[in-house]
Length: 185
Image (cartoon, rainbow, N blue to C red; front, side, top):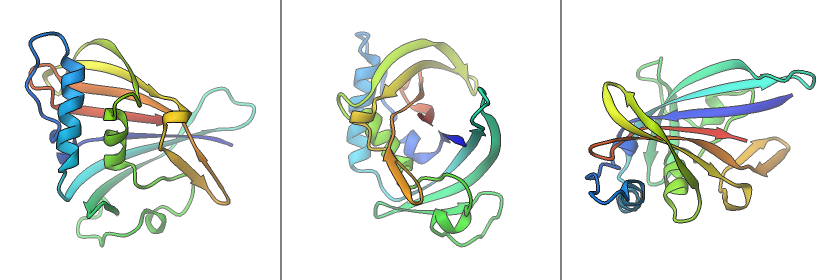
């Protein structure tokens, strides 16, 4: 069975990437540089994460959605704790205690932002001007090859570093991150 994991990240960690739009066309480079500065001082936070897990059999060409997990992620002192977003007041736990079947990964919520903003780690290309949540946005596609990736997926007893790709949507006026989509390859 082949599996694919896709995470949509929202919230204060993304909002911390706010920046003024540069006048000289270096919008993405300036936004990434400011993001690195903001991430260096990122405080403890709570965000919402939606993870879509897909699978396909050996003779199937298309992935089919297996499940969708809605989680609250709390980052305290660099450690991530999880709770189901649909169960208010649930105690924060390690992800392996909340999701006991299928592929999961931890340590990636702010790490994805750190990874793609690290100089030379991701290859970006502008995709289009877009509208997202009634805001003018600049949509970028990115790829992080395996040799530059820090993304490790574990399905006991196997573990491996994987390349990943995704999309980054920046507010066209403020360079605030509106959405970060990550897909492990």
